[in-house]
Length: 638
Image 1 (cartoon, rainbow, N blue to C red):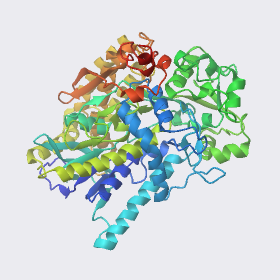
Image 2 (cartoon, rainbow, N blue to C red):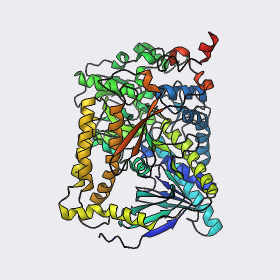
Image 3 (tube, one colour):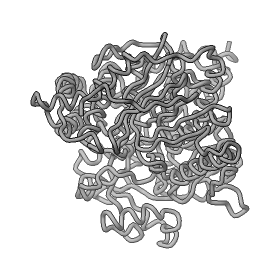
């Protein structure tokens, strides 16, 4: 059981990709195409990644539905959505490269919905000026994963023809969890993990590792995230010496299921609102018109009549406020519920039944129709849904170079939700899938180039391997010392984060949370499990808790430090956005097992030609006067 001298299975690769969602698969495809032997580590079964839950579409300014769309409009929308805290270079690359990545998916075999003239169809979504989301009904993420997975298989078939070995250049390790990264001389040297079904340890030696592990939602009680989202990549990076940024910014998707309790938090796609769905309170009022922030008043309709006209005449009308960025809609729903105008089960009503014909609803939103019919016994073609905010996405993640995706640790890359910077303080719906493709490809390419430039492969020290195995087996030794059940500790961690570092935050509550997390940290080190290592869920959770605790400390510490409200960070005691905070990033690093250091860092100023894409009056809402002194309008007045 606890014999750390057992034989450990070992493999050697050029690039190891940890995570088999959209970012991980696209990174692996690129690394393999660059001639590198590549491993894909999948925590769950291959094809079951959380990317499948991105239902609405993939944002790319192809201009198929409205020819006015282009990368500059997409860039502006992304920066506005992130309240100008985004890494502007990442937002620029994303806006420019997203269309090519979507068209590339078609060459892999993706089957998108089409316009009448045969182009890829694009739908409206919150925060996007034009219809921009390429989609497959409301199952876009599933199609993306299916397509990338099939591409992996086709590459393996090519390798088989050439070598007689399907896994000659790309191999998938199913149901495998990585617990530690290894370094040698300050550079990435490999990693170690275990097979979930057998409990056996497996070591990977590689000079380049791409983290693509997704988010941290399982640290919260109500979340749209699946069981894999325990902050593994964030925590692995921290323990390896990398830094995290923007961890105070958590997106609570405005529309998750609220009833029955067994499905609370499951995502209700934004496509419902993009296709005409409206939000109402218990009084039947379309309340979003009361919650349009000043910074968006010029861009959103102020009457239901204008909002409804926008769906058929977007050039001459403003969009309805149901399509405000997600942070704004989530806060509005939260306010309505707190004011006593919520639905019977603590949410609000999302109505598509009165807006579209039943057959059109089932055609556009087949997954939503099935989801509510099967799980809540609600027919969305006849009655409204009950929805409420659910922890959905973390904007924070590993601090990376925007062009290469490499962290401050040589050889360690990150893409997708576990990387930070691209989305600033709030992510627009649909930007996640294109983010995965753009930066997954960039990380795979950069990892291959890094390997090419590496003179000699770093060697993993046996002492590091022994220490990692010993730490992984610690919960079994704690069983003889009366340690706690990891499931109980997880429930308390989730309750702490949900109640004290949730959608609305206050200093005294966050200070309580940090104290509680320190106590939970002590208990996490001594949780105990019994039984065998062969598919032992208690053991798996005991190891995941270590990661959940570390990222929760990061969220709490950064949220307490940022004394303003911006995007996915709302302070009841600092309710307004402060331009003096816009250029400040909070950078986190690990000091030991469960201690976090926080430092402030200046945001790199946006390039002048990108700043000039915005009107001066808009920038004044976000920037200090000194920061926008070089804007084209300001220069013209000199």
